[in-house]
Image 1 (spheres, rainbow, N blue to C red):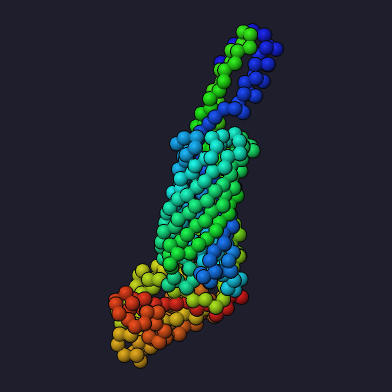
Image 2 (tube, rainbow, N blue to C red):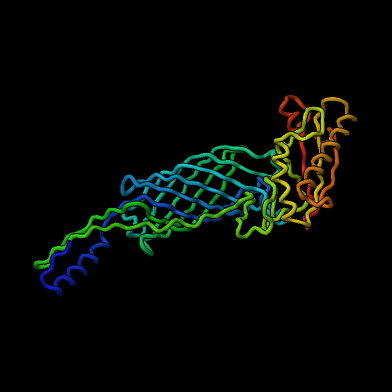
Length: 359
């Protein structure tokens, strides 16, 4: 509400109020979008290079202390066939201490630390697993650069407790965006007979566009030249399957002692078939494997029949026959040896796609 008797005095009062706003204090929830670089341990078989990305939701409790929820994904380069072999997904909770109390108005250094859970998706798949993660770091937030949006830079030390403990230095730079209601403490100044009261409500900018990766291969749909790749396959920067790799088709099972596919197996193969139509030059050997139960000669014959059953089903779903060969290995290539438990036998009974060439 503005009450002004003289227009010139009103203009002067407005200038005074807006110049005073630079000294206001504010606290609001915020989202931080932070791409960055990670230096993974070469003990994992990486080249020591990687890309990481954080999406952070923060809530300040005081001018100095905030809590943040951090969703993180990382991709590590392994240098194998010029592709990516290692992926990480993690979530953790951080405590943030602002060394100064001017966040949102001045350069604000801070320290940060947290704990959470991490999942490693490595090649080969028998290294996959979950563990804990501990992080510690420091950073800096700038004053707003546009409508409350600030620059944020951060350096972290992360320790993945899986496989005996792995250290990963990380560096990030991105944006911090206020969301929700922002409350300002606004000075009211009186110039002669003019009284101005102002209530400021800032509207958060729209969230960033959603990146869609329908086949989960790490390459978003807008840049994926080979859609519908099988889950677990290694791909190049264009999202196409690379040669010289083995893809285990999980839960492709058969009736006991037979080569007839179960309904669940057919459903899984329905999702695999489009990957061949999306990459016509790919040539794949379908490998059938059994456990050590029974006679070796019978297992070899059964594994061949099962591999051929998978090939026939994929052909019936539109896959060109020339892209597929079938071979039974019986119990000659065990993943778990010796077999001590039922779980070991289930791992050994499997169907694999061996990519012979990818074009």
